[in-house]
Length: 316
Image 1 (cartoon, rainbow, N blue to C red):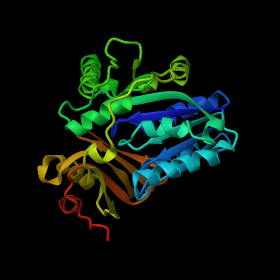
Image 2 (cartoon, rainbow, N blue to C red):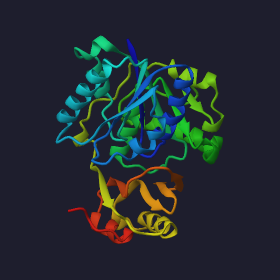
Image 3 (cartoon, one colour):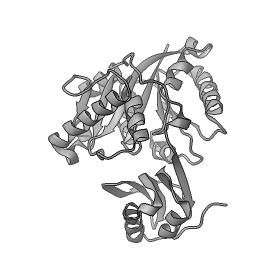
């Protein structure tokens, strides 16, 4: 049977960065792995960030788009069937930051998927610098994606410090309580709070074996979980310093909507720059390959106003 892990996490938490480290550790153990990027968006930026892992021990697969949630579930199941015949030791699934975790477990219980796969670990990535003021819909998603986790892994602990990291875990517990789930994480052993540069073989082995918990939140469909959306802007032609400032300005302009994350790429003289921005963090780092796209994720987005900030035209 193939172990299949689900890597969940709120928008911008750092799932892709974690997968890069976790996948390399699995390959160092001699495992052949598949990574399935399972996203609702039309352009999968995270898939590009994982291309450096591809090789004899690692394949990348993607599901993107879909006219409705049921169509997306069918595509997910079909992809798992195809991957089940390829001899993997482990498959890692990275869903969108807006995801119904029950979809994962439902797919594994269906024939013929259940012939090839068994649940491995559910790992939830939680930004230790998570903002305190979230909408009710965002609080629900935060809770629902962590409810079944075998372990919650905090990102950016070196920036947050011990006090803020503990407050973030307490925030998660409040979200779980508000969502009607009995699961709690504060003071427990199911949280890994550590600088990711210092993760050891023992840490990764713990995560690979952490499993999952039988816990859930009272069900809400994605349609009632809020108006989360993505806005895509192609060929944003701005110098890096200008783009950095324009992106920061998005959070200063409430008329743009409630923005959770901005990500994408822009061309540089000797390659590409990867953009990754949240309300309190913005990075632009070199990357070998990219695509001229900027994606803004949030609630109640005013696409035209965001386009004006970025000096971009709305896609036709």
